[in-house]
Length: 133
Image (tube, rainbow, N blue to C red; front, top):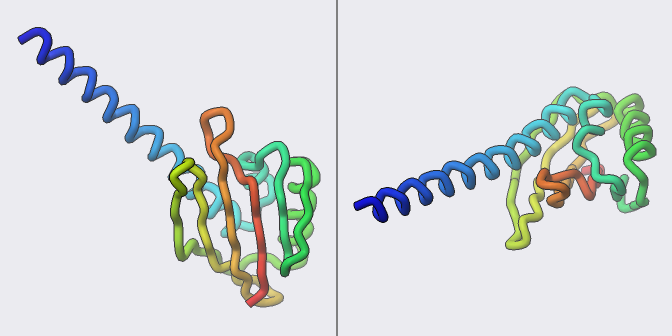
């Protein structure tokens, strides 16, 4: 009886911990979406990996997190958002999250690809790509 109780308790804790990790990952993606919706490079910078690949219409470059924040801030200044929504989300077998969204700004609509890689226990933005539709 004691053995059954210990196994049940262990599996319960494992389930709760696993659900918490999945929720935390989904929460990061939600926060990224919120930052894009608000046009806030400061909010978005909290979720940037130490090095980030940022692309605009196929022109991709790698930046450190500080440079990436400045590039994103400039984009938001030139094209402030009127709306942003994720239209598709997924995760690879390796735990790499990705999402595709639609960013509508003053200068048009962009398809946005976001890739988050696990880093120090929390997924961080590895790739951010804006393609004008």
